[in-house]
Structures are given as structure tokens and as C-alpha cells.
Length: 95
Image 1 (cartoon, rainbow, N blue to C red):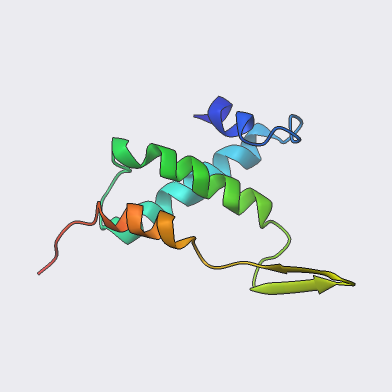
Image 2: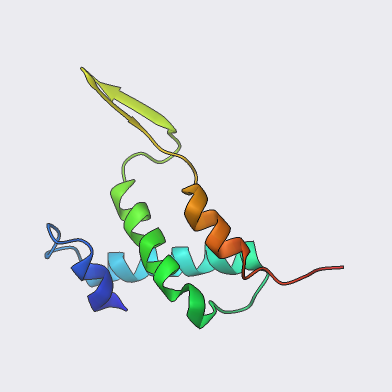
């Protein structure tokens, strides 16, 4: 999975493996929390990779939902809606 993540970050060949593993672990933890599961289902491994890429690209924006520098404005939602729907489709029922 680490090599697949590295492929999705083509300009970051030198990113430390420990950082990428940590991002994958964060993505897995969030998926487990959102689906009420103990492990990431095989059907959500691709979503986990996409989340890790999002986390990587948002590094330095912790706590911000919007950032402006000069004429450049960056805004970030918690999770893209399509990804959220994909993850929630794996949610376990609770009573």
C-alpha cells in the first residue's frame, strides 16, 4: 500500500516512509470510526489511499478550512462528498 500511495504523490519521491505510513494509519482510523468497524474492509482500501493523499496535501493547513495568500485562495472540506458516501456505504448498523 505504501508504494501505491507513493505513486499517487509523484512529486514527493523523497517523502519519508514513516510519514506515509502515518497518513495511511490516520486514514484507516478515520474509516474505522466512520464505519464502526475494527478494520478497513477490502472494498475501502482505495478510499483509504485517496484519504491519505488528501491528508498529505493538507499538511500545513491543520485547523484551517480556508487559506488565502495574495490572489490564491484554498478551501478544504472535511472529506469530499463522493468519498464520504463511499465510506458510509460500508457502515455497520447499530442499535
